[in-house]
Image (cartoon, rainbow, N blue to C red; front, side, top):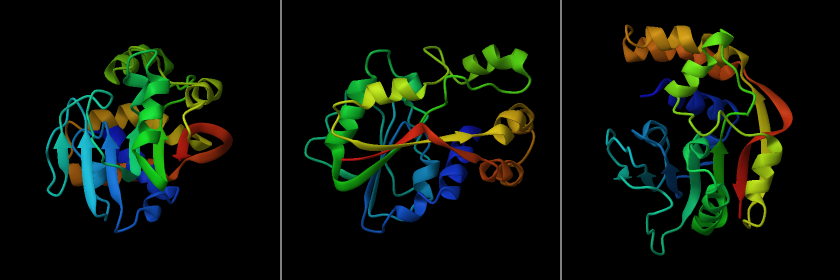
Length: 212
């Protein structure tokens, strides 16, 4: 389990999004790697699409392929997750990415999409370039609100953008990441958990929640 995955799972739970997932929902996780987030959801079906998919949990359909290249046929989903993925996809494909999400959502469904803000910085600041490489942020560190809105234009999605200030995570990321090599996973989760409850909503936006 990646530290950032655990953080995002806790954060979105704090925002109440997981409570919206129903037992009858079909859920798609784009870029979910090992399926940690899906493994914690109670729903009818779980599909994970990721070129680096690592089958780890039972009850998840893992597909090791690029999201934009995969043929989903007639399948659609009630919930689509894309947690810190769009900053990794090729430049110029962002609008197509959101259009694909819109096409895969059932009427009344919702997509939860997160991405770092363009001005994100960790502590200490002189390690920002190293962290960017560690996070594979070769294209960009993140996006501004105006960039996200441009990507979402003419996609057919009705979007709510919510910006979150994450001082605890950014301050403690490097120390906790270092401890990850030494501490058992359960103890690490207990250490990292408070960072997911220390966020401050700052309207208007950075992470889109989209509905068709």
